[in-house]
Structure formats: structure tokens, C-alpha cells
Image 1: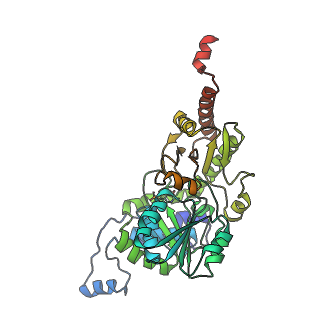
Image 2 (image 1 turned 180 degrees about the vertical axis):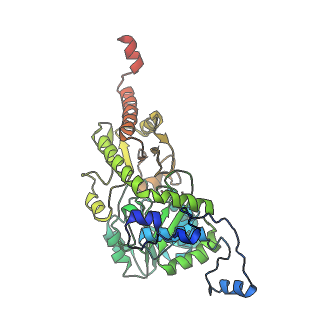
Image 3 (image 1 turned 135 degrees about the vertical axis):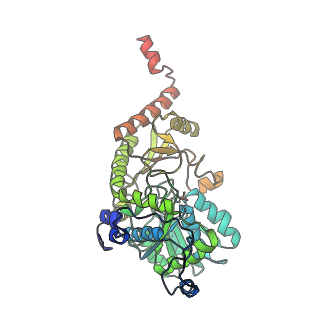
Length: 414
Ligand SMILES: *Cc1c(COP(=O)(O)O)cnc(C)c1O
């Protein structure tokens, strides 16, 4: 079946950019693992290198499997083109290497995925790119900082791990007045919940390791935007600078994951909404950050630019950093692990784990509290997720209030 770019999301996720008739009727796209491609003559090879035919040359420049995936991803993000990479960081670094040079400035939001922060701070900065961190939740702040030196503005929304949203359309309006690109990490939302390009961003990056793959069995990423930008990132950032090329096997796994993305996301969102409501009413939880809660400060912005509130929650307990760790350790079904967007509910403590690349001063400057806990709500039955959270909270806080009787001890007393 041939589908048009305008088809509905679910249909595109299953059919876009693949016509089984051209592949012996194979329902699932073939896995191309060839590293190189043979030419019929030197002349034909020469023409391929000049871009005068569309022959494949060498897998670092692309493969037929990768091509199907990229067109499908572009359709889902409603972008002109996309470029698949070996990891989310592969997409982020290949893009940034291609877009800035020494002397340029990048303005980034205060809250960033740990390795993105590390790449800006310990990578690009040492190569002479000026990095400024600005609170982009307030678009006015960007207006004050941006100048002709600013070539790129970078943000996540919602941000990892603290769920801050930025108004993508408002930022795009400001960057549009300069020779400056707006780049959004859309990992938390996936293209099913939010399309930054439609909102005015120039570049959108993803860790496909998370919801897009969805089963915790691959590492991948992609960037989407204009054809011109994708060509530049492919032929410089990816081919020459990082070499972070996706394998044919991972292309296949990712295409499989994408087929159920919309179904999984609906359930992630439904479960997360119920888990957030449970946490918000618990006396042991001080703050629950979830865009679907009516008292979430940026709720109006969430409903303006996101279709649903997503599967990620951040929380702070009414307790110490040690009690936060105890709470995580007391969970039985929910696993303490980094990554997110899998079928399994995963929990982690950013200050100790994903964001440990930040120093203590950097953590506070970037608004990540030492007690913050990140929860990726999975696809188990929501009652079982809540029951596990409940027993862990009760065990930490009943111990703290001096009640040392374990339930089995009480049974003996009775
Ligand atoms: C995981 C993640 C990344 C990095 O992606 P990898 O696939 O692990 O390289 C980037 N941004 C966000 C928001 C992430 O959650």
C-alpha cells in the first residue's frame, strides 16, 4: 500500500515509505546489512560520488533499510526529511557539529539531558563555541540574550528530568528574526504527542532508544528538518565527525517498534495520568510534576502544544535525599534503571545517576533538586504500578515515624 504524507499518524507509522510490491511482497521491510555497494562501472561509481544518480555507495552514507526508516520518521514528524543515527547522542552531536563553528553561540535551556549538557560543556565549548544557559520557559529571556552571534537555540520540552516545558512556537518566532536555528529534543513526547517542526522549530532530535523503539532492546536516534539541513548533517556531522551510523538490524527493530507507537503511547499516557493523581494526593509526596495535572503550573502550555501529557513523571518526596533513595530501593516490581519509554516502569534518581555529570553547583543552577526522582510509567496494569509505589512509600515513612512493626510482626502480635 502507498500512503500519502497526509495520512493519519497510526497509518503512517505502519505503512509510510514502504511498498511491499517492490520487495517480493514482503510485509516487513528487508534488513540490509551490506557495508558496501557494487557498481557496474567506474563511470557509474563516479556519478554516484558526484550525486548524479541515487545508487547506494557505502553504508556510512546510507542504506536502503535506513532510507525507509528515515522517510517514515520524516512523515511522523511532518518534516521534509530525517536522518537516522546509532543513538540519540549520535543525532545530537552530528547535528551540532554541522550547525556551529568556533565563535558562534548556542543558547540552551537550563535543564538538559545529562550527556547533552556534557557535550555542550566539555565538548563544543572547548572547541571555541560559546554556550549560554538561559531559562527558556520564559520566552522574554531569549529576547534579551539572543544576538547575531547566536546560531542555535536548544531545548527539550518537557525537559529531562524535571518536566519544564518551553513554548516552542514563541521561541520559533524569536529565532526566526535571526540567522538562528531552533532545535528541540522531542524524546519525551515522541512525534505522536508533539511536532516541533509544525510549531516552527527548524530541527528536531530524538533518542529512538526510548518510546520509539519501546522495548528496551536497541540504541538509536534521529534528527528531522529540511532536506538541505539533513544533507549537510549526513555528509559532514554523521559521515565525517561522528560516524554514528545506525545498523540495519536496529533499523528493523525500530521499524517494528514504530508500528505500535500510537497504541503504546495512549496507554503510557493513561497510566501516567492515574499514577500522577495517586502521587499528588499522597501525604508523603511533596511535589508531583506531570503536565496532565490541573495544578501543573504550565498546564495551559501543555494543552496548547502537546496532544496528551505523556508517560513521564518527576516527583519529590516529603523527605531527605536518603529517604528518596530508600523509596527507590523498596520498590519490588518497578525497576531502578535509567532509560525510559519501555514497557517496564522504570525509576531513577537523577542527581546520583543520569545527571551525575553535573557538579552539585551545576545541579542547583540547572534546577535539578537532590531529591528529585524520575519515573517512566510503563505498560503494566496501573493498579499494580500504584500498589508498588504505595507499599514503598509506606515502608519508608512508617519506619521514619517510629513504627517498627513489620506487617508479619503485627500478625504474630495479633
Ligand atoms: C536518552 C536521551 C538522549 C540520548 O539518547 P541515546 O539514545 O541514549 O543516545 C537524549 N535526550 C533525551 C531527552 C534522552 O532521554
